[in-house]
Length: 158
Image 1: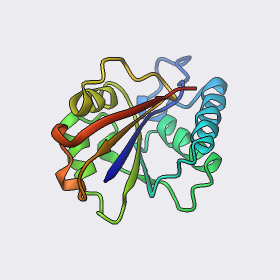
Image 2 (image 1 turned 45 degrees about the horizontal axis):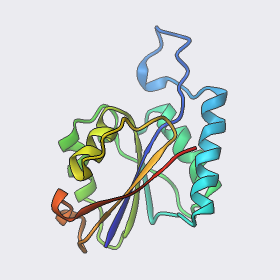
Image 3 (image 1 turned 45 degrees about the vertical axis):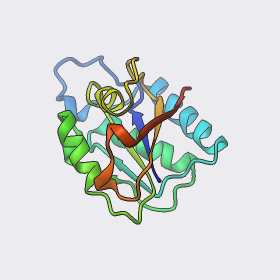
Image 4 (image 1 turned 90 degrees about the vertical axis):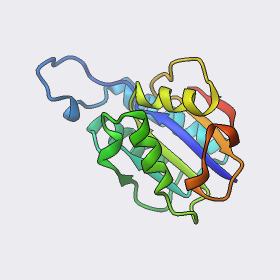
């Protein structure tokens, strides 16, 4: 079985409309919410084998705070594809994950993360900031993940 956690970055600072989107940081609330979702994941004993994040500052910061809260023992990996990705690009990047990884967390942005949940499970809601979705796949390889073997397990909210 393969388990995928889809985590949307926390609240971003929109006070500077001229700032390049990639460099937008989290608000104080966003940092606090990142800690909250991290604590909630830790309470559920969730510590993925691999955390891969968009390198955009708001996603990177969310991923690093969550990794710290869950005592993730490795470095967060960053994948440029996740930033402003189309659905097929995110799915393709997930399928490149080594099969030694059974539990993967992807930290990124909407609308692509919500589209990812919808495409695999039919999940109907927009994924809110600093919330996560768990999807289990009944397969042994990331190359085999598909709607036919995907099951929505839970929404983890702050």
